[in-house]
Image (cartoon, rainbow over all chains, first blue to last red; front, side, top):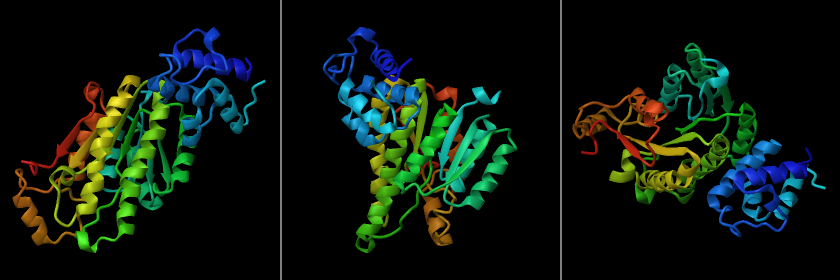
Length: 80
Length: 246
């Protein structure tokens, strides 16, 4: 499974939505499923999936799928 | 109980006082432990005692006011793939009147009692959210609600933990994390060893049970909060003060 596939699956699991809804444009608070509680779960799931510990500033900035990819790239993860 | 299924508890301030008593209490309850304190020798002694109860014990020597060290601690802790309980006992008391308290002393109190607590809760709750289960226990104080002449700085930072406990209980409850605090009264620890016998006698007069509490008195309540018996309990500040509050 590629990192992009892992990321999409993690988002789908954390937000409890269909994986087909995970696009780069999907943003925090833009859908009812991505609320503050889901965001907490998302952060925890991303850390578990990629075995990293995110900086608080990065968590604050993680406002969309595209932004998440950009931030996770700082942790030596590649998204093609 | 096999190691893989044992609950894991992280205890700060574990080298002495309430933290050390809590380590022994949770070891007796069959938990594995990560013990944190600044003094490696005292910490090693506590760890050895806890291992005699069959616990797997990891010790980490660090200063909780160093936020980077805290991050490193959790980077190592996440390799355990489990964290069930955080008991944050580290702290110190400042006995000084308003006019004699410097702003740097206030800042130091704030850093250890609120900032470090906040960061610990941030990091621990992220590990706990993965398993949709967790338990945070913070150490408040009787003076947080009652006030104490000569402890305005200490009592105010301890009072801030009430808001933190209640807010986090509401915020983290949906992901299965409970948040409670204990508020000890006069307990015989290194924090109160500088009290004169006269002062102790004067304080004991105000305690319904007419004795100074022991660290184990508090540790047993923390042990309860970390047990399945407290699984429907969150957002509570439990006084452990022998009736000092009455």
